[in-house]
Each structure stands twice: as C-alpha cells, then as structure tokens.
Amino acid sequence: MVAFKSPKFKARFKQIEINMTAWEKSFADVMSKGIKQAATVWLNATVLLIIPVWSGASRATFLKLARAVSFPLTITGIQARSSNNPWAKGPSIGFQQSEGKLNLDRLKDGIATFTYETSLFHLVFNEYNNANDNPEAGRLFARLKEPGPYHFQKIGQDAFEDFARDAVVLPSPFKSLKFKSLRVG
Image (cartoon, rainbow, N blue to C red):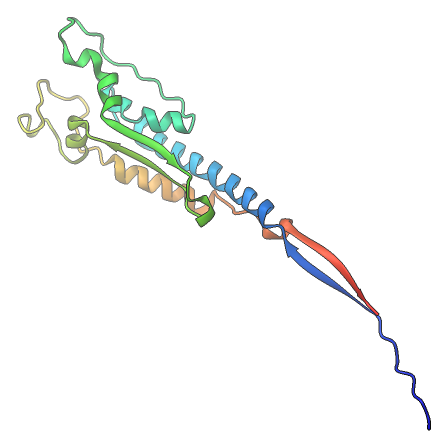
C-alpha cells in the first residue's frame, strides 16, 4: 500500500468590513453642512435680492430660518412717527407670523431639509400680485416703490437647485473600510 501525503496549501484572504458608525457620522456631517449652505443660498437669493424693506416685517419672516443656519440677517425699517402706527412693530409682526427651521431628524434616511413659511398677508399677496394694480385687495395704503409680484419662491428654488446640483459631495465609503487578513493553512 502506498500512502500519499496530501499537499499543504497556504492562503491569505482579505476580509472587508465597513465601519458603518464612522460612515454614518461622516454622511450626517456632510448633509448637515450641505443643507445649511443650501438654506443660506436660498436666503441670499430670496431675502437680500428680492424682498424690499419698508417696515421690516417681510424680511423678519425669514429670521427664524436665518438664525437656524447662522445667516447674518439684520432688519432695518421705517421709524414710527407715532406710537399707534401698526408698522412701528414691523419686524416683530413678521417674526410672529412665520416659521423657519432645519429638519435634520431623518439624516439616517438620507433626508435633510429646511422649512420656511409665513402668513404675513402683504408678503404673500405681493409674492403673486402687484399691489399697486389692485390696492384694495392688497390692503395698500401707499403706493409701493418695489411692487410685486416677487416670485421669491421660484427664485429661491432655482438658487437652491443650482447649489444642490454640484455643491454637496457625499463622503466616500472607502474611507470607512477596514481590512482584516485571514490565514488558512
């Protein structure tokens, strides 16, 4: 009887693992910064370039979002000539009639958004209309130097989309890879 000795093989394998915790943190950082930058671009295009200042009420509707993303928005308006002038409190009226915030609670799902909304009548009216053409419907008591329609929502959307198309680059998953060597034999 002849005995054969089986040949020995040695092998080295590389096992790849993804450090999901590290990648998710990197992803969340990129998305958080990206949505803040996008909101800043949106605010710049809508508030600074489109919305005129009179009492400060319209611009003040953007303050909550501006604060959420550290956008330097200052409000200046007319000085009240009498204490019963309703526009003397323009910025506080605009601030009260608005919402603005970052929405980062769904980052794990890949979703980061910002929200702006207002119920300030004259801003909403001037978004779609020229109050000088219909002063009664717009509750206009003086001729506007910069009448609507503003279309700031469309202008802001275009600015946001231009930014979002190229500006945010997701982190590479390759930076979160771990390699382990396995020896066999």
